[in-house]
Image 1 (cartoon, rainbow, N blue to C red):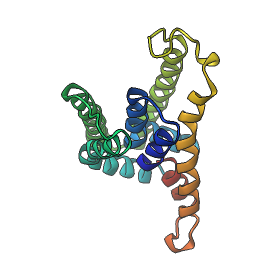
Image 2 (cartoon, rainbow, N blue to C red):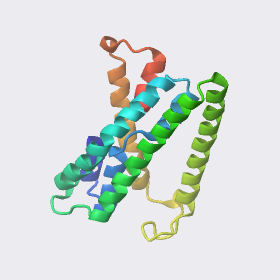
Image 3 (cartoon, helix red, strand yellow):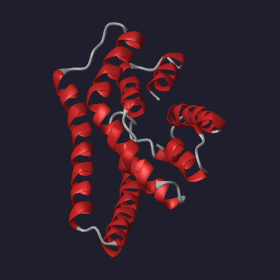
Image 4 (cartoon, rainbow, N blue to C red):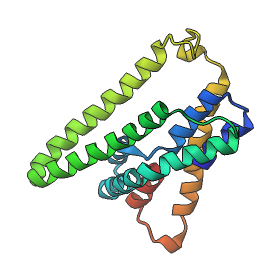
Length: 194
């Protein structure tokens, strides 16, 4: 959640660019990766897709708002440039377009066999995206990492990535466990992953 990312950014006194990157990542909608993960662990995929669609649509307004609010709160003076804002909006719009295309294909090919094929392609693409992300992170020689391999980076890097995820997961597990919401186990899984 964005508040968790802002808290970590503030507590660790991160520089502006890495701090904003963490704020962007924690403010982003779940995206299609959460759908892939929900399907892998037998969560409620329809609920996950619906939550992804809703959070992506809300993300068009809330992502820029969260980034603006938390960068002002944590850094008070520095704000993103117009090009950086355009990149953020482009990323959210890409997820929304992908969801609309997926919904359109689902209507054009309503048979269970077609859905199983699209599902298999989606799982394969999700896995390839994960592998690509790991390869890029491991082989990155950009100035941000000074050529340090992924496995030799400072422990703070790993804490920065995992702390907001663990914090948000714990909060969501606690909330979905409340009997008032009457969520079945597959629904709880979808909500926690999303």
